[in-house]
Figure: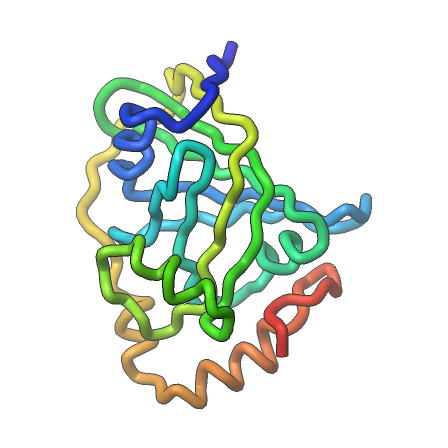
Length: 184
């Protein structure tokens, strides 16, 4: 049985920030739409903004489903699993939105992330959390972290700024369910 928390406490915040990977789940409203689950990682790309708000940096990648689904209905869940130490799973359910670099709010949100990975940044995803729960995690395996992959950073370093503009316009404008992705 999950334990429900009223807010993101200091203890929960530390747990969330200590996890090297988390999973993002969204879905469209249509019955025939695709449920999407995306793994997220890279040190310094997740932030706890306050007791009921979190955010993560979203980088240019193959799909735009999270942003598409958020633009349609805002529903989102983030799941964090302890792969080391005591077993635990924390889920943050809420309403999410994407804030792109063109939005005036982006610069303020960006200050919450200590790492200066700017190449390929597509948006900050902000989640207003309305349900915080944790559960045992007894079946989550123990794993050792070897480190962040640097492939995305290296891939982005070889691109000029026009590449990202074209990629966003041509490959991130519409999600797989036909919903709008990034504003063009």
